[in-house]
Amino acid sequence: MTRSITGDRPVLIVGAGIGGLTTALALHQAGVPVRVFEAVRAIRPLGVGINLLPHSVRILTDLGVGPALAATAIETSALAYFNKHGQPIWSEPRGLAAGYPVPQFSIHRGELQWILYQAVEARLGSGSVLTGHELVRWEDTGAEVRAVFVDRETGRESNPIRGAALVGADGIHSVVRRTFHPDEGPARFSGRMLWRAVTDAEPYLDGRTMIMAGHQRQKFVAYPISRVRADRGRSLVNWIAELEVGGGTPPRQDWSREVAKEVFAPAFASWRFDWLDVPGLIAGAETVFEYPMVDRDPLPRWTHGRVTLLGDAAHAMYPIGSNGASQAILDAAALTRRLVDSADVERALEEYQDDRLGPTAEVVLANRRNGPEQVMQIAEERAPAGFGHIHDVIPRAELEDIAARYKRTAGFAPDQVRREAAR
Image 1 (cartoon, one colour):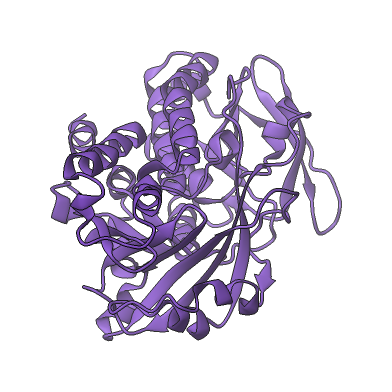
Image 2 (tube, helix red, strand yellow):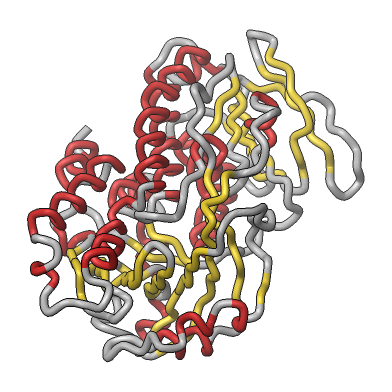
């Protein structure tokens, strides 16, 4: 049983984001005691939209939050790519429409975090997530971890908190990762900037499709994220405008850097397609947030004794292929499985690392090559003025291969999801 590994000592999770909260739910469900520590004082619904791919939705469904997701999110029906003229390049069904045993969901990141947070509080008990506590140091004695946190409000340090293991799920600016890699420096900037917002609008296409238009240097992404709004005949559209801005040092990535639309909107002024009004979506947003597109190089290891990394702290990646949150959720399931199946905590963390380090590194590198979105760049290079039919420019077999190869790399090919569901 799991308790033979951890006894009464909890697993200490640093970070109450999507990865940390999912890990807490999974470990608790498996009978492993957990404590969660979050640096911010209050959990607030920050961020904008994200996608949950079927392999992660299967895990969240097993954790009992599927109904809450379905009541909040949009069940994504399709993914479609277009060139900068609005001409179709490639489209494919998603989720249940593609034969998966579970849906794909598009949801506001903050609403997903809130669903997970409420589930943790309900199951582990009120106050199980200790907010306003920032990790400052820890000691791995070989038999346990003793972590010290500082209360951000009072500046006081806690007494050492003892745990069976410590999981750094503290994001792209991870304190845990930085402790092991003090010379790594800032996140790696792609030279591309993202501007993100949500706009209340009339539904486009079928009201449940995620679209991407443009190419590597200029791209627009849009997808609806609110079931409640859709039930009222409207669409809360999450959108991302992306431009290549060159090198240099970008501003620190966070969830609250507001910018004026005039910074980027002129570049999209002519993008009025017969199925989507891009300038209208941009104009209709109340607030726009700016994010540099950054990632981090894959690490040679995540686990050091009784301490390991998870989610963005382990494998921050470009937001390409809709994989960031999903991969963190897969981490949570893999870590839990190893802690349940192994006879030793350190061995369990090493086995978790062996399970996840290689596959996530492949996704990081695939995203640097534009992942499945490379079809837009290929169309731009081969037919910048547009085309009569996409198959005159890119053969169907080439498009199918790009899509299938990325699904397999990221672990959500239909047969992979069905196989995991049957375990």
